[in-house]
Length: 346
Length: 250
Image 1 (cartoon, each protein chain N blue to C red):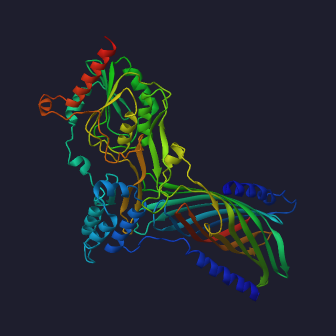
Image 2 (image 1 turned 90 degrees about the vertical axis):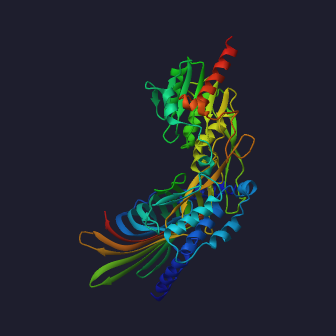
Image 3 (image 1 turned 90 degrees about the horizontal axis):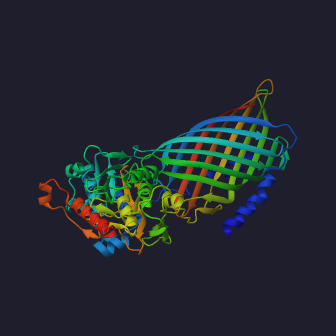
């Protein structure tokens, strides 16, 4: 009986020893210092663009920590702490880096807020008129010069393969197609891939993807090739112009990356907003969510597209056109498509 | 190659656990329990989420073989109290116990146990890392000790069960790998992990006292605890639970 008692005591001891083996590694104190340190360390271990941001922006993450640590004081308010934390992560100039609290969203959207928008919603809508079709996230119509116009403002909830097949089948008699993704802030990569896959007849290398494998700034997996496979439904064979602006971000940036690899496609407008790091979410002790880029996507030449993709034809909105209720970018796209149609059908 | 070798060993050993059922009397017990859970998974959050745990356990015990199926669910909350996480899991274990010691009222059995676990932890706030899937196939060391005693002119039995995972295979995403890469693009990156006591220092234990009722019926009251911990692909996970369980003989 005594032996049994000893065995049970030993097991209970082992139980408590074991339960300390795998525990929290980040600061847990819900204090200004604890929260800032946790945020800094979380980013330090998990953010995927440190080397690139150091090369492009000169961001030294250790120096950033020292600089912002000095701004803390034990008596600072929650709003003041939020402000300091947001300023720290804004140094990375990454639209996918956010600090989320119930009262505000910390962000750096300077990639489009400081740039011309090149998009007027009321003017763009006038091209769709009143009789346009709606298929999931796609709005489409046929312009009076027989050019198909498809507006895709988000990849959040579509389009699916069936939506794209049906829209392209309806627009098949058109001489060319405009896909207007201005102000498309992204969504699901699967939806972006669904749309792009209807514009190729063969499997095409469109880029590479890789992720972090450890806490070091350079702990990355091998780059894995990303291919665009032709869709099984309707596939578009005529010229296409994709209209972009600085607000084309994340999955929309990825869509442009894929379309840029296809021979019949012209990119027109402004440079995209970028956002090539797939974001993950974590948190700090006070419960604020931390969103950060975790998975890197590069183009087919293994070049970063984090800060955007340049168009083939750079066009900005002309104020004379705006006053005439005309969209310079759509008009230019129509001109390109009509010219291409005329040259192939003399 | 190491992963393949472990898989072969597991496949070779599992049949010993799944030996033909002895044509002997079996006891089937059903337990329900509730208690406290503490779950951390650094793929989802660096912090431990805590909350209630509900569990259901069905066990069929033969002379030397034991089959155990458990289901659990835990609604959990982060330390700040503003985000919920949900932990679900189903497990099945089959053990073959050898008689190790029988001395008076004390009986000790031990043997291998094949153990399968399928589960998921879902975080309601996360975007591209909303959940962590859990899948493992392990070979455990299993111990079952009983002690019969008489108190207040009635027969009681105290039972202690302990399982320690030894080797096996487990699923884990890579440190910063997305499910999009794994399941849409099909990019494998050491997602099948060789599990051993150094990266899976875990144990499950249970202490039950049975109260024999009339008509050969029994009522069981006990304590069930799981201390499951893993360190795979630089991702850390722990799931600690302590529950009070109540059971009947079916």
